[in-house]
Length: 184
Image (cartoon, rainbow, N blue to C red; front, side):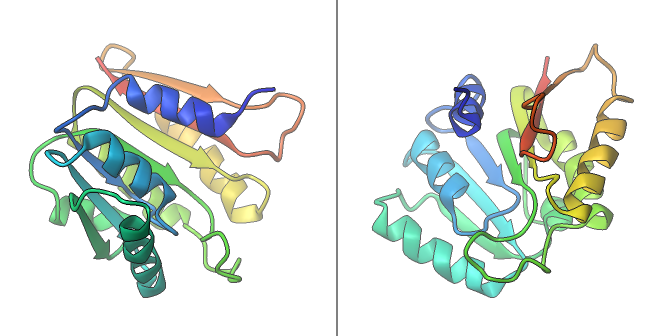
């Protein structure tokens, strides 16, 4: 059976390594932040965003418990403001759209109004031979609309600059799926 989380890591690891800069655009509880932190190592950098102060507290605690190097910066702001905090180019970025797992608040989700500008900004931050991964959760109304809007946007981008792919379970239309954009 296909494990989407394993595929996420496979694609990210083909671009990201020791000493690189990566961004977790939707921090949540910090699982993607942990993966990125351990991948870039002590000489790399990870910047992570969330609008919920509780996400920063939970992630900081988790990163320390999980033995991550002190290479991370957690920012309490919307992912669409990432360019205000990031200097230079990044090798990898991750979006895990939807709501924060375990928060008990399924009403607070990522929204199209900020997700699309955040993805546009993230693409502009990508270095050569870099990747942006966007996980979409169409099982709730806003998630389905986010996915549709992102797919429409991605389809307008030049195939000579970016390779964009979508990975989805065909026989389970409300299951999560992801899209990747790789720079050439």
